[in-house]
Length: 96
Image (cartoon, rainbow, N blue to C red; front, side, top):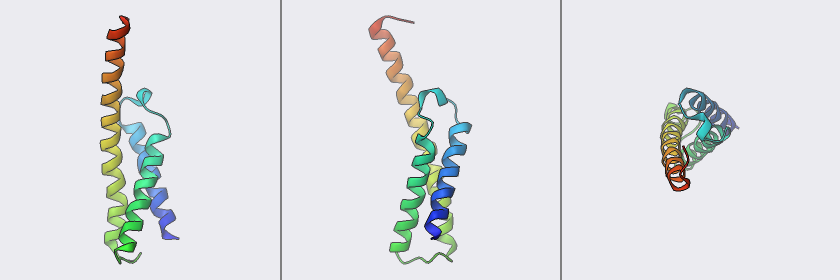
């Protein structure tokens, strides 16, 4: 049941990153929270399969740090890619 906490923490980190990073108009509103939840759940699952118990602080640290790092990197890359694609499309269509 502690995996639910890791998923909720990951979703909360993703939601906070969605509002903290610029370029919200270039991303879907649910991408960051869902990505954070998935990464939190995957990190928790991988560490429990590796033999760590829920009372080990390492599993909690990784369940918090992994979504933060992955979501921040993914949102930054997605925003840059969208800006590049939009600029190329504007040039191609000769608008703006």
